[in-house]
Length: 80
Image (cartoon, helix red, strand yellow):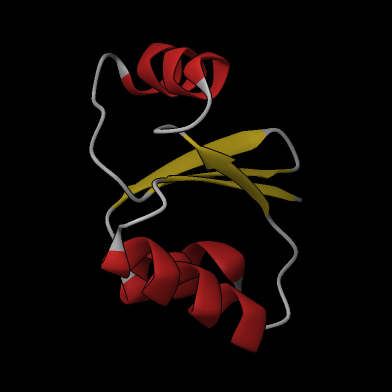
């Protein structure tokens, strides 16, 4: 399973999401769309142009799930 979190340096919901994943001991890759133009373009391509953060992509055995915002219930369902 791979988890990618697209975020910005100043997003409080991004911090909450990453703290939550840390608490659950789930490894993730953080991509800062406000610091990295490639990450921003990657997120835009994956999301169909959506640039709101946090935006999480979970690839679990080839099934790709996308989560907009810090949706704890949806994340728990995907990550169980």
